[in-house]
Image 1 (tube, rainbow, N blue to C red):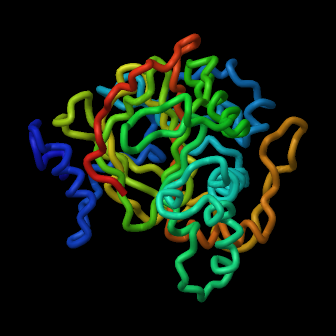
Image 2: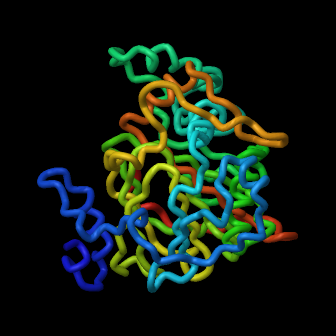
Length: 341
């Protein structure tokens, strides 16, 4: 329905964005692609990542991944939940407990002191463990966290003067994902975590602030589902709508690296698609030698499961510089996002 709403034109992306963001009446989702029900395979490099290497970061063997392409969008790869059962909770815990810690930067730093945002998890767990608590915790006020080269939301640039070590575990996960997709040697240099509540959205934009666009953009989704709109290289190109469920991974590379995209709506995860069960205990696979995936305690999971009942976390990982490349003395200016969270 949405695809036939508009022809090409200056406002076509915005019209479809508003269509899916609409609350009353709710939009018709019949045109939204659900890759979990599609078989349009993409060939992956199964030899690039060994089964042992995949297991160490919580992934299934590459030969078992279900990877899809999208007609008219070369370089776009959608991988439907390649994670081993029981490992998504570890990555969600990292996103909620570990990655927001200092020296990483988050939206709360804009109006709070570093001391107040030093332990967001610790200041939130008591309220989130109580099922009847209505107090809004710092964790529930979290909207974004930046890693590595910290993205400057005002100038839309990265800077060598604003940099902290990139998390090793997330780099290993990203390096194995990209290697299997045909991009060996990927260096995780910057990450942006977006935290979505049920009424959140992410506006129309293109990720072009990185100085090297030959390396892919990697996106991980955890928690509730979302509608993702993938447009074209021009702002006015009508987008294609697709569903992202917990555990799904997207790779934007080649001609698809600089396409406009947006997230107009968060949706409840369908039965069987929320791999992060929100009740009872979890079963994490036994850790192997060299594994970065650790067991999540029942206390930690009580907080995580309460959080994702109405929330979604998205992690994007980027390589900012080509090998040997340096930052320019004068930062470049970039586009702004039309509609933020």
